[in-house]
Length: 305
Image 1 (cartoon, rainbow, N blue to C red):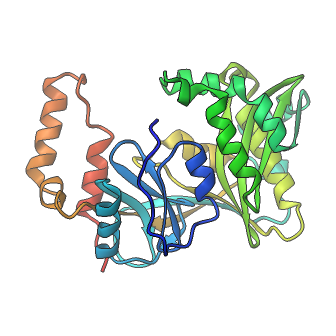
Image 2 (cartoon, rainbow, N blue to C red; image 1 turned 90 degrees about the vertical axis):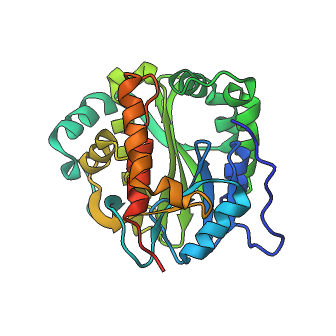
């Protein structure tokens, strides 16, 4: 993961989470009252992912020109595009009864062996190494910057200085098995990250962690809603069902995909989509565009002013 040298214009008001995302090594741009972060080599996505962005197509394309990215993915305030899901929890009586049956059984079975609580940034600095090493294997990261605690130390230092940002973790005995980073904005808590160590997957740490985090956060004074963002795009059904089974309400929202103005005529064309699909078939999956084609197709169906 390379640190970007791109800098936002001096008159841009910095989003509260910008320093934290930069600390993680991401490109982070504050524009149109929204934080934009990189998603792979070519794309920008808005954060929080289901926050409605009030910007014109021309403004989004200028953002792409300025950042050198090809594709912007966000939820618009108006216009048309693919319909996806967003996940919100606002129940005042949230509890085990709110969970899907199998999810609830996992929480009951494994929750008794776990300790879930808020973490200090000092604890995050010193106790997350095993989780990040495991993530590096899953994500096939190899550089010292991507896998080392020095990399994450920069993020935790930025987090400590970010109002409303906090960490919540799940321990099994002395091991930190997973954590959530969340950000409180007014009466809403936004989920930012959920990381877990796959070594504890049999103990359903993700289920135990999300349930306890959700219950503890909704019990905080002044918090009326937890926002767990929108569906991944292209959609990953397992992630959607995970949030839904945890008791989050599934609501519909519109997704917009805007392309760089110089690349738009090429990337939106049917012939390009046909060629990419043909390359995938001929190469028998060695060159796969399965993740790219749905994004380009969504751009063809996006209409904003």
